Length: 203
Image (cartoon, rainbow, N blue to C red; front, side, top):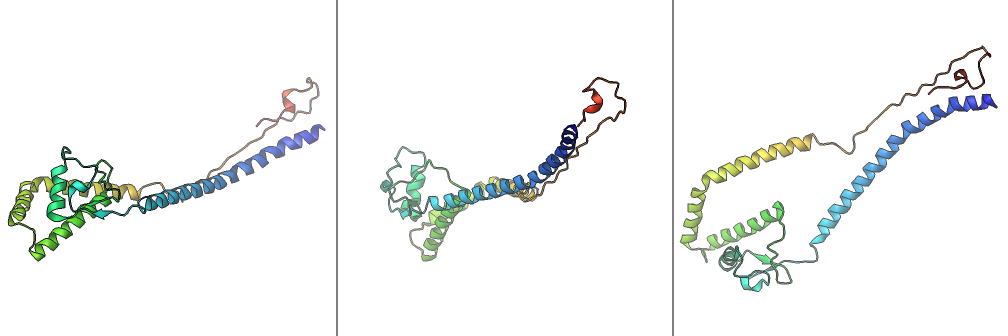
């Protein structure tokens, strides 16, 4: 019976070591698959978030229920709607001016306004020479600030590129090694009391 226990004590650490060495690979695969599916679910949710809400062109800023004349950007919105017609509202007649805006959404809105202004300039309608002079004056007046912002954006782009190049990849393989040792003192001397240290294996 004691030989059976002794043999089990010798085999158990080896089996445990093999199980521990193979478990991290399985765990890493399940974590990466879970992470990938979560990312895909988030992308799908964001892409479907605004599909039910088509944006309608506004012809008068008063059509927007959530924009009031006391708002700090009311005059800017009124000017963009009345002069250039490049502001769109949601189907429920709201503008959602307090809602966060991504850089992509801002770029799309700015592009729409610039395209509309270019069309108006090309057709020589509704664009007053005074507006062009104002744009030129503001461009010259804020030339230093625009150059500074351009430099900061370039700096941020280079830092972002560095971070993207050095980020932790979910496909990186992590490998480890576990070393187990077993020791036992062999003693032919039966003079000691039963259960002395020479009968006990040490892990």
